[in-house]
Length: 100
Image 1 (cartoon, helix red, strand yellow):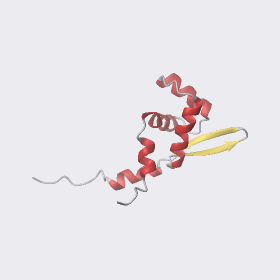
Image 2 (tube, one colour):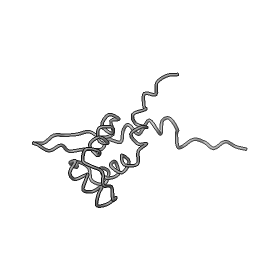
Image 3 (cartoon, helix red, strand yellow):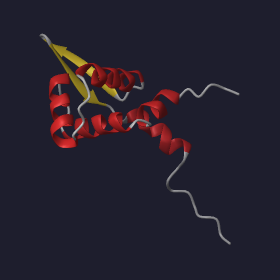
Image 4 (cartoon, one colour):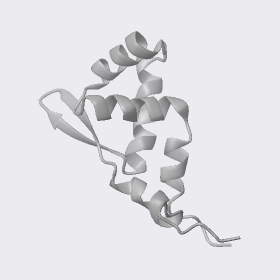
């Protein structure tokens, strides 16, 4: 059986915390780890450590869903939804319904 080349994307979005991180970056792109942690705590009641959120961001980066940019001592996280196209390509939305 061939290895699923898109497995990183499915793994990344399979976790609720990572989906919330993507939601937050969709709402406000270009956040630092500190900003993300604050928003996750205040808006969603997630009391995850900075290290845990950083690990989630690493998984999202490996899947290509998040890209980072360094500016001075800050690291900004940006969402990239293009890897999600694989889902629509694999299971098209606009398929014709079978006739009975």
